[in-house]
Image (cartoon, one colour):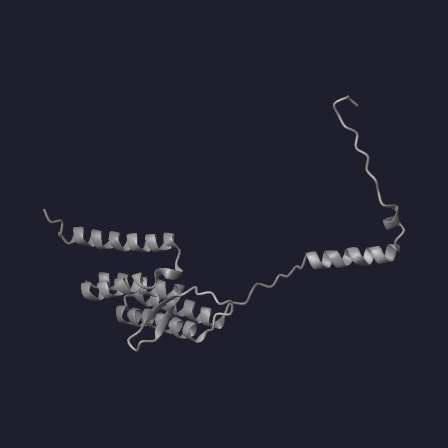
Length: 177
């Protein structure tokens, strides 16, 4: 050993080795069991979440097959289902994750992520159908429920809508010059 290196001496507690071997083994097993719980079960999705997801994708299927009125009704149903489900739920941890908006009766409406997606689809549908008034109503509605979505998702959604309107405007010869 060189002069620069320090020598370390380790002391071991002899009393610990005097413990009953079986007792020591039992404690080790308990520690292992407590520190690691393996399960191959995934968390069961909520029935409401499954119903909302199914309703959303069924409405998208209607849209893709050209059934625009059924798609509009389907997306409105998603919003209705989610607002009912969330309005009926009491938040267990006391946090407010959903955006609240007053409906016509003065009661607060609660929106969630499926509502945001459905309303965004409604904006696209009305834009595609050429109904600017309904498109703007849905766009304003979409902006009113963005509080639960990440800022990046909101920015992406708003920019996507602006790009759609811009490209539609250019295709229809509204370049104005």
